[in-house]
Length: 326
Image 1 (tube, rainbow, N blue to C red):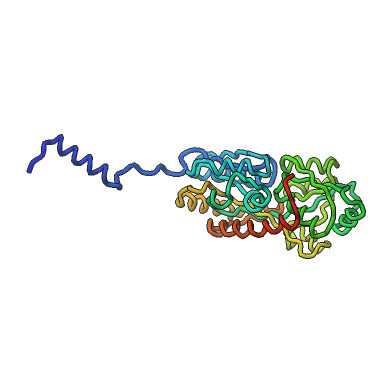
Image 2 (cartoon, rainbow, N blue to C red):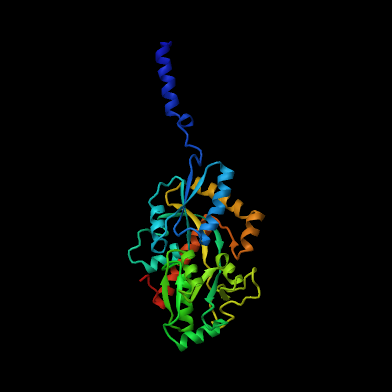
């Protein structure tokens, strides 16, 4: 049986259209710049680490990673923007303990669900905080600070990078466990809070070693102890808060990169492999370890499990301490 050439061409065309092998392929990823939302002001540890990772991805993949600082409301503004972004891998967010574990207990009308609205990619760092004190406060140790706070209730204020973030919750935990009355003063970002402490506007602050140590070296601030359960490899002579007078105190914030929930699994895994590879390079490890940052990685599943566990943990802590965003 013979077909007219035009009919034969039509049949072949229909065959190609019906066969998935010849269907339009999904564009390669990434195929345009990647926006990495940092839900806090520039200059803090989250911003510094995110930019370092973004620079590496830009070089390796040939697509620019644009860090978008969307600060405000304890990180909730930036996180909500990310949750509502296109799930194509071209919008990511750096979240942390505060945005994805603490905030659900602090904000009764949170504009995002930290579990349902996100697809975890990988942990990127844990960052113990230092307890920094302005030199005007007559205390040389954690025990001294607690004694001063008890002798003069509500006269010592503590600066934080935001309400509900790690710098806030670390102080609330100290306040609860040592039974002292100190006053919370939130600022817009870690840099602003640290500037307030250096100027003497605030008396104490939990801050990362990355940005706080230069002020210790200049003699403007005292560093009393670190928040983690074990000593810092950067300053092994520095005691932990648990060793320095508050037994059982252990506060180690974590950071990680996430994507909107519906992002394809293949993209999540490609991002995971790239980010893990970047973080495990010797130059990245040495760059941040010397500044008190412990770079770490995980599978998406491990990161997801951590978030769920931490939400439960912080629900109890927030209730026990009476912490609020007011």
